[in-house]
Length: 60
Image (cartoon, rainbow, N blue to C red; front, top):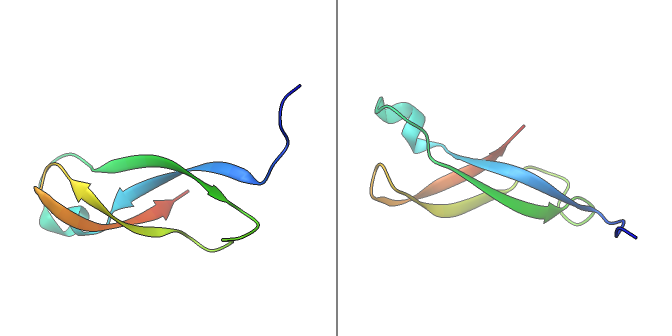
């Protein structure tokens, strides 16, 4: 039987990459607990195209 829980998959997208004008996107897939963090998630992750650590925000 499958587990029932509050964890959902979310997609994280780089905020700096949109402004740079370079082609492509930097996205990560992760999970979060909807009950503990109802707002959008924001994490620092590595952007392979810009070759540096940037802020990634949750998108819908």
